[in-house]
Figure (cartoon, rainbow, N blue to C red):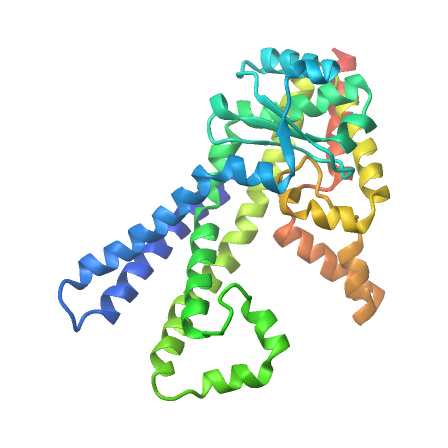
Length: 338
């Protein structure tokens, strides 16, 4: 965990430093290349800040959630008030979506403007003590300043994705700029070849893609697994904090089992609809084993399972539910022994 927290700031600084050097080299034939390079680097940071400032409204929109007064759901309102007092954080705004997928997440950079987002699928599935444990887990993220930690940690990923997108649009022009490059290739491979061969003017654009796109891909390859490791650690920390605050690790363990069963029973279409908030929710909104199964159909079942394990190791934002249940069981046993 310590290594991860050191690697991510180094990647961010290195990414911006290389961008500065590349832009300075490209415009070195012109006046004041350092100023131009600095402006580009600052522009990327401005994009990142803009994304984070709009995060609350964006996530709430993706979750299809609307703010509700605490008395609209008395049991939920009481659980939120108690958990906030136990964890010494401000009472968040409650937002509820009508989705059947079991969503539970908090969004907001500062504790004072946090939104707690829950779906009807979560509220309806859980008993009162389970619901309070889930609320405590989410508010534990607030108490632990995880939004700030993960926002800072994700800086190289956000910047690299933004640069890759801009470089791709510049280098691979297409009639519909809202269409992804992959979709354009699939729909009109002949047109793509034509665009690619449209004279010498395209060469500088392709060079920019290889320079900036290549840098972005390398940064993503290094930063994404590091962010995933940190995210899994923060989830386990929130479990421990919530279990300690409520004094009931068993209630959180029961809630995790209930929600995982609910995810398994949720139609695939509903899970896809909620996929944009999956990484923020208390459990990932996909069915365990789907990746391994899909990989296994292309080759052997064993190789598919290995590929699935490797993918989870590198990219999973949540620890396995089994691992979380083991830790909560240990906490329960420790509390029972004292």
